[in-house]
Image (cartoon, rainbow, N blue to C red; front, side):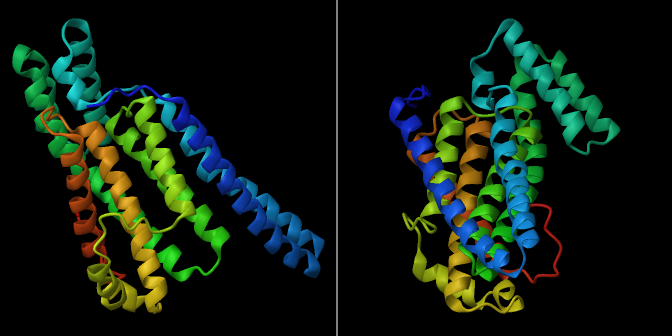
Length: 294
């Protein structure tokens, strides 16, 4: 695996994408604001205030908030020893008790792992992955479903951009909160670049079976339920798929404890996982409750 140092070009790309997104948001917001201003100046002011609140609360805060979490992954637990190993095992136990609905027996079980000496990490990793993964899957499923509906129904680019950015940055933050730790700075930066890029160029078709995606989007129960045309349904599905891939990559950064897997294998795994969840979403009726695990 390549080292995770942040290179200058990644930073330049990140800043450039932020500027492009901001320019797009400002341009579209001014257009809408002018129209509202022609009706009444108060409407224009209220619109700009709402945009500022949404951008700060829904985009900036989740982006910055991720960096307050400690850097870690299950892969690193295999390489830790001594005090560091005990510290992270204890942190994982506390996080499980806080963020997962465990029975009293399960709480005692997970606490007992700390006394297993050399087997502590293996037992804790297996339990952590088994209990955390369904919680993450629910968050990911719900976010992708929202993005499909918002970007398929909305015909306004500024709403699409704000909605996608807010949903995806919030999802990354939520994943780190549930796990109790975050990827490295370089990995977070790559995720943010992916989110910004897919917002600017909605629909990264790399490795995407578009021929299979179109009928799923247009003929699926969810697409029919909200009454959208083929082009809008496909656009929403593409956006949802890129979100699911980003979420799967985030999960793999944190929960992958198999050091033998290559980056290519993880990439293929993330795509397969994302496509399977998307097909499940598109087949769901809009009133059906979210499944325990996608």
